[in-house]
Length: 119
Image (tube, rainbow, N blue to C red; front, side, top):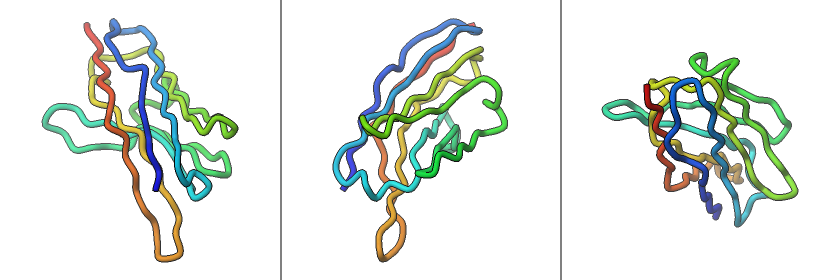
């Protein structure tokens, strides 16, 4: 069992910056990757960025060069620094953790935090 709690969402003007954070608790030793998805109105949930247990990062093409994902293993937290925000970035951002188990992979989700970018 893994619990994920997001924080840091809010309202920001286009071109501004915002940081969202995710705190993981529970059986965090099994997390093989952790990151962020987002879902805008009427859209499917999409991967924004994630980071593996080995430190490799992955970004959606739409956010490359603008967003940076980082983790603090000691605190079991992952942050997403979002710069040069665009109105198209407006969405509910969900923390996600992929957990390895003997029978396969589990997916855990946070409750989501709203990010709104005004033009």
